[in-house]
Length: 488
Image (cartoon, rainbow, N blue to C red; front, side, top):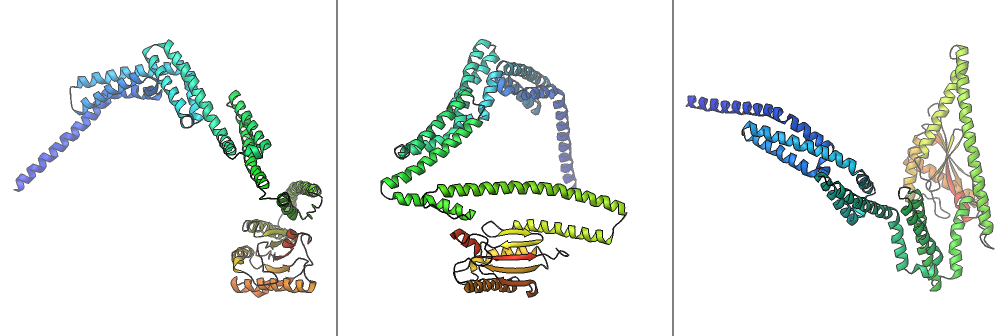
């Protein structure tokens, strides 16, 4: 029994060795007979013969596949050699034909690529399909040697590709405008806002004309289309307002008052009294003057910042030169460097704190090394000093900002607007400051020796008390952070 088992194992091993030997021999034969075929196939694929010489390439692939099949089945080696040689011949024919087609049909190929870049297959599928059919037919005629008819088909393909490309470009830039204008026509906007709607349609026509004349310079058509979109949407909005007035759902007085509201909001931001008793012209002039002044001041600050950066660089170079002359560190120099480094750290920490708050939560200011958190999002009920749960998230961010400055001194300042009695405002501002102080002690675990609460009442306004927006800014809590420069 043992002898029989050993014999079976020996047979299996022999079969395995024979199979391995056959596999090795087959690999060697493939390298021998397919070397030229593999090279010819790669060359044909490199010039995209499958597209530009489909008949010859398909014939080469058939002979190539037949040769592989014969080799795998262990058939006569001469048959393998013959099929491989035929494959080489067809592949080389395909390569030459593809190269000729790419030269002869270069214009059609470029038009095809331009259309594909413009997403014509997706945005103009019918025209693209027609163009593809003409292009493929031109390739087939080229491969048959019928150059005359191939060029005729090429011209037809070029025209269709370019038409599909133009349709696709217009779809990309003008379809949104056309949709808006169609919506406007369905809503009968022309009856209520004909001037604005007419402007939108003229802009669309201008954009389409520009694309027809020069489809590849799309900057101007894109700009015209965006303006057309704006005017179309504006016409839709105006038609709703005009319809409400005509249907008596909105009186002319209400319309004017509604339009005054945005001006009042802008005036509040600019801290300008919204005087419109004789119309908006005076207020508009004041707002324009205010924002021009702000722009000029910003430009001056930017210039001053640039000059300061140059001055700081010069001082740093002076400090290095002085250090070289002194030949080492002195106590005064070391103290100066320490102060400069501390100030640089405070600046970095200030920028870190700025990123913690949104503009609706807090405004962050810096006065020298002192940081001020103006908590515009911290609101109290009228006449009350109780912190509301709605403010807990904001105060959590305040805690993060304070943690950026370890061992800093903190002053909580309470402020009110000018409405109400002076004594009452002073008392209310102090109570609100102390309420925030107690919250910091209890919820933030800040030691009392770091905290001071001070109420200033209405004595330190930051905006005009003549406007509602200004009074809202004056009712505030400021957290003043004085960093410890030794540890900051």
